[in-house]
Amino acid sequence: MLGRSIVRDTAEPQEATRRLALMNLMVTVGPSLAPLIGGALATTLGWRSIFYALFGLGVVGFLFTWRMLPETGAPGAAVNARELGRNYRKLLASPAFLGFSIGGGCATTSMYAFIASAPFIFVDQLHRPAHEAGIYLAILVSGVWLGSFLTSHLISRVRVDRLMTRSNALSVVAAFVLLGAALTEHLSVPLIVACMFLFTVGVGMASPPALTQAISVNPQVIGSASGLYGFTQMAVGALCTALAGMGHANPALASAIVLAGAGIVAQLSFAVALRTQRRAAAAASATKLSA
Image (cartoon, rainbow, N blue to C red; front, side, top):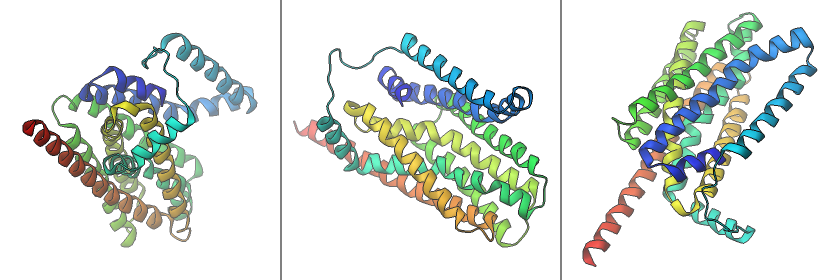
């Protein structure tokens, strides 16, 4: 959250989106490498070595944050609980912020529904060896990486709002193809991996623009907006995972329904947020002209 606030404090919207895409790109490297590194540590040094390595990484992260991240807030500014509460109330009362944050959560962390169901889909439904599930998930994580990479290069040529909605549309199409295969019982490993790879490419492309739009709604409370956006993402991810878990009889169908539904909610939320933004901009222009 701190990194997001610093990026938004020090860059214009398009450049902020580019930087956030790069940040997203680096963040996704961790989940893709973690299973491989963790497995190697557990095999060679024992499972306890994983926790020692995590502690070491935490210390390194703290030192880099302490020494290298600049302070972008006003010097001497004090923040109290009442002020934070006021900031959160303003954000929660904003249809634009709610649209971007709920839409951003549905467009991104909804993929947790499939990640949680993947072992049951590949092992129980498709009868693949258990170790293959990790390989397929690593491929999906690389889709997020590719999406973030594409966003960092497309943002200079495509408007942020269009990039956000069109990226999510790609995820929606992929989710409905997966849903159709589940309903017609034509599931296969290549089809599932291809659909979910496209879905996660859309996730990687939609995430930076959605975040940029959400924390730009009120530039005075960027830190609060970033934290609330992150909370919304995790809440949506948890809800989608719980909903997918209810379909234990057919996990592929359950996760596909959740992904498709979340994608539609994301598109509707983005539409509401963008319409609210346009109305606010039109009202501000009219006020300026009348003055």
